[in-house]
Length: 193
Ligand code: SF4
Image 1 (cartoon, rainbow, N blue to C red):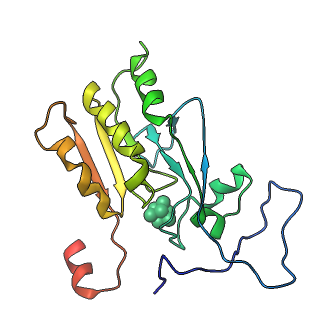
Image 2: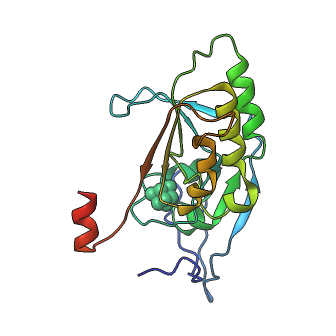
């Protein structure tokens, strides 16, 4: 089983959006955590997929330290000029303006209070959230505006923010949480099923 703290050599497939690629002739360096600030001017991402039960999502980060090999979001990192392999796992962008941008979106007359789902191309409770608290700040805005929220995560750090759904004021009125459980353990699979 992969140890998330283990240093692995840099390994990325060729990025189809770049005209050049990196090749190492000597020892391949280890993929180490690098954090980049993303100052996007909007935080709500819309989709019209018939497969999803929601239109709006918020990604406080891009890339994900959890490093799941099966992650469908990996190719989205290539749009940033990074790789879909270890770059996705260790070159992570943070959006420090996310809560302010969310508040601005809620203030628009056109906003009708639709469900917004956290995560999609990241895990909003990956380890960086413990110190950056960007997801927490966004949820506080959702609580203030009584906006319904869905959260997709596999991280226990979500427990830190249960107070926002647990009777404090303001609190999130309508919170749905999908928890990812990766296991081959027969008993756990039986419980989850
Ligand atoms: S936790 Fe989710 S976003 Fe993160 S690597 Fe795994 S599948 Fe991708």
